Amino acid sequence: MTQTIAPRVRVLVLLLLAATGLLLAGAGPASAHAALTGSDPQQGTVVDKAPDQISLTFSEKVAMSDGSLRVLDPKGKRVDQGKDSNVSGTTYAVQLHSGLPDGTYTVTYQVVSEDSHPVAGAYTFSIGAPSRTSVSVSGQTAGGGVVGWLYGFGRYVSYAGFAVMIGGAAFVLACWQRGSGVRAVQRTVVSGWLALTGATLLLLLLRGSYTSTGSVGDIFDLNLLGQVLQTKTGAALVSRLLLLAAAALFIAVLFGAYDKREDEEKRDLTFGLAIGGTVVAAGLAASWAMAEHASTGLQTGIAMPVDVIHLLAVAAWLGGLCTLLVALYRADTPIERAAVSRFSTLAFGSVLTLVATGIYQSWRQLGSWSAFTETRYGQLLLVKIGLVALLVGIAWISRRWTARLGDTGVLTTEEAEEADGEETAVREKEHVGAKASGADSARAAQLARQRAAVDTARRKRQRDADPDRFGLRRSVLAEAGVAVVLLAVTTVLTQTEPGRTEQEAKAATSSSASSSSSSADSSAAVTLDMPFDTGGEDGKGVVRVDLNPARVGANEMHVYVERPNGRAFDVPEVKVSFTLEAKGIGPLPVTPDRITTGHWSAGGVQLPMAGDWKIAVTVRTSDIDQTTVSKNAQIG
Image 1 (cartoon, rainbow, N blue to C red):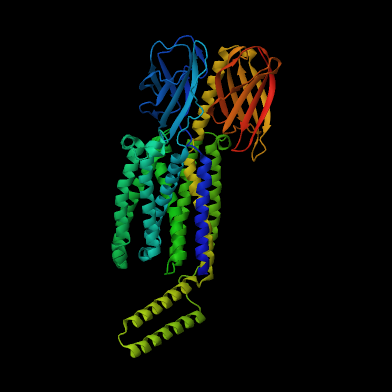
Image 2: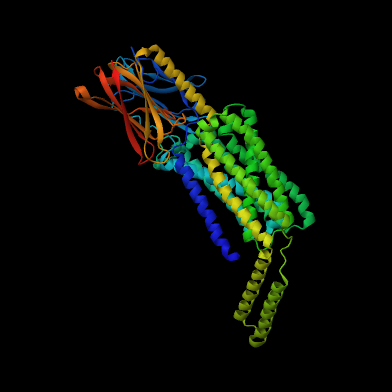
């Protein structure tokens, strides 16, 4: 039995790495939790004279620093005065230099949303008439690259460390007080503290580069670090480090003075440790609630305490589960049935708490039933709900094994006789050796090692003797494997734009597009629907091109990529080209800008003459899967 422990633990570690790699790699750059909902001038418009300022409106308040808003002329030179200001509510502006010449200008923005995630983007507008521009806006991303991946990994490790540390300590105090003297349990809780502390320091160093340049070389920039310390997220990370110092003292007492107390003396100390540990744990959980999703949006006064309770319930369940797994596989002393039963009760209460708080959080972040399937946040939430249901099912199996579990895991008669025989043989060897060699220290050390080996073997056989204990270990191992994936999904979920925000941004974008279209000659607009299939997995969809006013000169183009069921299709790249084959003109390439999931746009699309134009769209759904579809349309 014991020979299978190491392979199973290795499998669990591999599962952890695979889940983390797949989910964090699939996440890409951190999704924007504040979306651009309006601008003045609008995307792709042509104004008669140069505006005094450029204003942007977001779906929520954002944090800005020097250079957050930039306006570049056709040659890439900055023409703004560099003084960003909050005009009103969620609208921000930057003043422009006077006397700007005609041409196409590029507006770029890189800000931090109120829930701590970076937001970046760009669009163009023209003064007088469109012109060529040397500015590329296709690379406007935030939170991506190596720094983004490291930041996501740090978040995962911090959540895992928090769960293991808090859940492990709660398991010892509430379920198995004898576990305070078990080295394997001590190492588990201390490892959780080390993981959370190391990850917090890493996040603090990465934060400045993550929200600005994204450069690895800026990780140790002290100026960026100073700016981070003045932000809400920086304050939360520093608070977490201070609370971890208090947690270190708590762990020292739990595995030091507490373990040495007699049972009667432990009762009083248990109460004090429970109160102090709860305060520290709640404070650590609040360091997430005060800087992320719960701190912005609807009902923040309710959402933040609910988020704290949710995190504590997750830690008690998953962290306790991890500690139980260690106790079943690594502890020399068999864990009692009563301790496993107490954890089963604690886990059941944690699940009920998770369901209640999770329902509230889902309503707050989604806002509608359709957001479950139409937004990435909702789809990830469905995956999380499925994993929780699977975890509860496996826990029910573990509960059945617990009901059949023996209290002590006593050896069978044959095993006991064998162990006694081995111990007697060792003692006889010890007696003979002592008579033969007297005070031979080398021989004495050898005999001591033999006694220790016999004792260890006997304890392991005693631990593994109960077949019901073997069944419990397997079911708990399966629970831990699902919990690893669940934690990875939860980490990605916290980096994903909430469904409510995504749908509001889509609605605002559609309203803006409709308003812009209504002001032009909408009767001449062209709309083309073209099905496509890139040949890869999940490669089918429909691309729709709206060209307005579809005439000679400047046009505004919107490209919508949808799945066959009508939902927005998040593809990495879309390109469009125009060809007038009758006159030998083209192809004229156009690379639209990504507005939101499945929506791309380009302004100032110049068509030099009327005719039957071939409009070709290239859609890329993965690194290697892409296709080009086309249709003809009469322009002018």
